[in-house]
Amino acid sequence: MSSSPTYSGRHRAPGRHRAPRRGPRLPAGFRGGFVLPSAAAAALVVTATGATVAESSPAHAALTGNSTTMQARSAALAEFDHTESVQQREAQSSAVAAQVLETQRRAEVARIARDAERRAVAKRRSAAAAVKRAEAERKSREGWIMPIKGAVFTSGYGWRWGRMHQGDDFGTPVGTPLHAMSTGRVVFAGWQGGYGNKVEIEYWDGTVSVFGHMSSIGVSVGDKVAPGDLVGASGNTGHSTGPHLHLEIHPNGGAAIDPAPWLRDHGLQ
Ligand SMILES: [Zn+2]
Image 1 (tube, rainbow, N blue to C red):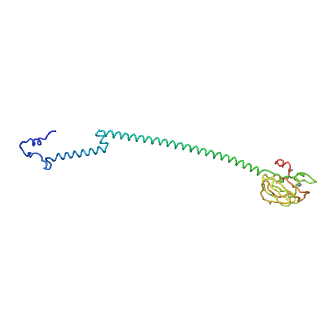
Image 2: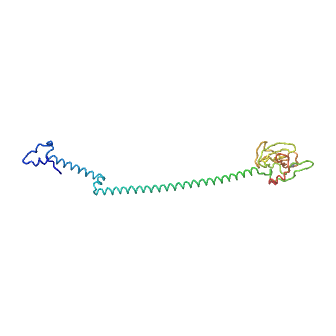
Image 3: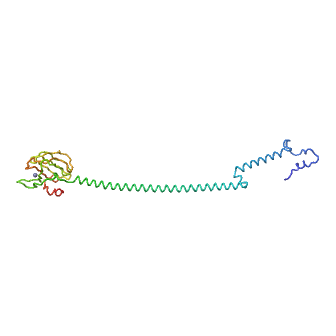
């Protein structure tokens, strides 16, 4: 450190009590023992501040290169490792969660597919059952039955005693229930000459049946009937030689035909 000539000259002046008044002079308060204590105080402040900083800041420690630096680095690395492992664990957890979600999603898709298949099968079965039912209903609706049960054939279709007999006769006690032969509609119900009490029914295929000599009539014109419906009772009214059912069959409402072959064709005799 180089000394200022003025400064040196002042201290080297022998026998003098006062420094020569040369150069700038400090105010009295700044001379003598004042400077050193001030410098010491400043150094103490720095030390205190430095210590405080060192304790509180790893950055400061890193600058100074002491053991605190290594600790800070280790802590930072540990923190990094911790952070990394947390991130890894979180990533693994996310992967597992995603796997679970995917598994659930696939299970849901499979369940929906199974349900759809079950519904489709049920629908097909239901449709098949409905077709069966409809067919059964149609058969039932379009089926044919004899108008009386246990009747005895007594006279057939054809010329008899000089006149045309238009139907078959079935001997049966008066009051025997008479039934509609299939699904149809009553087109005549009442008294008509030699027929006595007579009921005509037009069926679904156009065939018209005639019941004659009835003791009672249980239907009116326009009534709808199903196979087996009761339409009245057999009797001996009109030109009749004994209790019986006189049955005529008129295909498509036209001329009467021999009932026997028609009955056979319809599975009735
Ligand atoms: Zn007859």
